[in-house]
Each structure stands twice: as C-alpha cells, then as structure tokens.
Amino acid sequence: MVGDEHVYFRTVELHELQRNRARLYEDWYHLRFSQKARKLKAISQLPLHGLNLALIWLLGWTNNWGESVSRPSLLFGAIFAIFGAIYALVPFTPEIDHPWQKSFDITLLIGFTNHNSVGQWPLTLLQDIHAILAVTLYTVFFATLISKLSRTR
Image 1 (cartoon, rainbow, N blue to C red):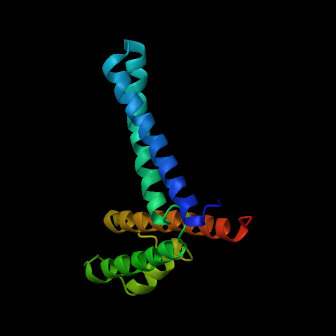
Image 2: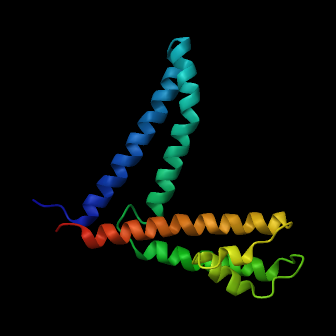
C-alpha cells in the first residue's frame, strides 16, 4: 500500500510537533527530578524549545505542513489588506500619501527602503513588522512551491 500526499504531510506534522513537544517535556522533567547541573541546562533550554515548538507550529500551519501553496498566497493578500488599512486609517504624522501603494511595496518587498520613516518610531516599527511578516511568508511560500514542483513522484 502506498500512502498519498495527504498522509505524508500529516505524518510530517505529527513527527515535528511530537519531537518538539518531547524536547520541551524532557526539559520539564529535568527541572523537577534532575540534579542541579542538569536543572540549569534545562532552564536555559526550556525557553528555546518552547519558541522552537511555537515557530514550527506557526510555520507548519502557514503552508498546511507543506501541502498548501494557496494558504501562504492568501496570507500575502491578508497582510497587504491589513497593513494597507492600518496605513490608511491611522493618523500618522506626516500623513501617508499613498497607503495602499506603501502596503503593496512592502508586502512584495520591492520598495521597503523607499518608505523609510526616520524619526517616526511607531511607523518605522510597524513597517519593520510588516517586512518581517512578508519575508517569512516569502520563505514559506517559495520553499513550499519548490518542494511541490521538484518532488520525485
């Protein structure tokens, strides 16, 4: 019997989440029952393993564990719309002349430097978050697309 792609992607999801949960639970175990040196190591590893689990879960959800190219595409549209609305509705000083063009440029990473806002830390922070989300989605989208197109059948 040969499993289909859906079974493969569910297996990837299960494996990655369980492996990361096991690391996290192992840290908890060592915090409670191990000697001092191992407890200190577990204290330092616990936040990193927790962050790793959260990131693996979030990025896996983003592309449905490698199964969906459309989900990251829809998330691109959502990022464009959400940040476009923020740029259009929030009263920044000075006012943003072309908020939807700004959102388009930053979402597609074609004009981020053209929208640098020196001295306006709330807007600069918002643009940085916008760019980080866009880069993350690009990474997930292209990795998923290449994986789908180059997989040996």
